[in-house]
Amino acid sequence: MYTNNTLLLDFQSKKRYLKPNVTPSLHLPERSLDKKFAPSSPSKKGDRRTIRAGRRQTTTFEVEDFPLGDTDGTLSTNSNTFGETNTVSVDEMNAASALLYLADPAKIRETVRLGHKPKFFVHTASADECIVLFFLFCGRLMQDKYVQVSLDTMTNITISHFLTTDVHLNAWCGIQTFKGFDCLADTIDLILQETKYPVSFRLSTREMLCLCLIKLKTALPFSCIAPVFKISHVTCSNYFTIMIDILYVILKNFIRWPSKKEIRKTMPRCFGKYPDTRVILDCSETRIDKLGCIDCRVKTFSHYKGHETIKYLLGIDPSGEVTYISVTYGGRASDKFIFNDCGLADILEEGDGVMVDKGFDIDTELLRLGCKLIRPPFMRRKKRLNPEEAIENADIAQLRVHVEHAFSRVKAFRIFETQLCYNLLHLADKMIFVICGLVNLETSIMIKEVMYSHPI
Image (cartoon, rainbow, N blue to C red; front, side, top):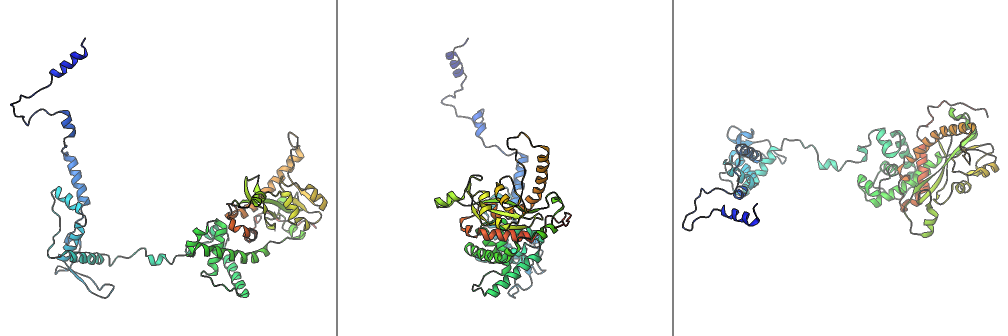
């Protein structure tokens, strides 16, 4: 067995030493360290790849590449945009191609390293002449080319270039047809003329109407909508406020409380078990920005949403038309408080059926008014519903599907589905009326239902 000292001696004895008076030879055995750091000569295959890559990167110009020359060795074209006729000789073309080639010194170094000669000749053109000839020659090559995109035409593009079909209009503005959009715009023009509005607008009436509807439907910030109409976000906000005021005056007339006779004439067949239904009620909440006032925070905080909200009550008739809208309340208000405070109880008649969800605890109020409450049964402390209650629950749930479809049209306007900015809170009541008025202008959701007349 060898020790460490023995191994060290054996290793040292194998080293080769040159004598002091011997000249080192160039053919000494190479060490592995020398092989590692020695520059490796490229292989034949790798050298070919390098040459091909260099050729692809090298930009060359020859006379044969430009079949624009005449027989006399010059390049002549028709008159340019200024009415002048220019002639470029072959020497000038070579000078321009030389300037283009010399613009990248790395290409020349690569060409020389690979053993190639640049394919251009410079005769008598100076550096300044080469610059002039280069741009003249490039302009000559591009003279007959058509420009696909022009910045001048881009500045004239407006939102009307994109809203070309009824589907696009409905997706962006919430109006189903251009006919309805034009009718609404004409009504706004008539109101502005009758009231002699003292303000002049940068946008047309249709553009301002489109701006307002896009804000209601998409809930995009004014900073995103303003560039589309080429105005500032402050001007965009002002136009939105003006349009909301005008649309409120127009569309609030489409929110009306129908009579019993009208309700029965348009009663869908699926409401056969509940022919006395006059209105379907539901409350909706919208998040708002956190307010600075502590008292306002307390009044608007909703334990259901866990955030500051505003709350409003909507009433829909069995055919799906919005017939009642309350003012907005703070998120702290309950459904029962809103029903008693909004004034709906004053317009209900004796014998009317009111369909609500389980959250409405208005049994006493409707009993005092002589109205009928239509609501899914509660489980109370029972383990299950009895057969009669189960059938009633299924029937009401089937009707609530149509009602939720009507409410979804209102919620399709994203302005009340996203968090509402504090600077738009003063317009909340008017915006709800405008949205519901636009919903009533749409085709009824019960259009495919078989209508029947109920005897009065």
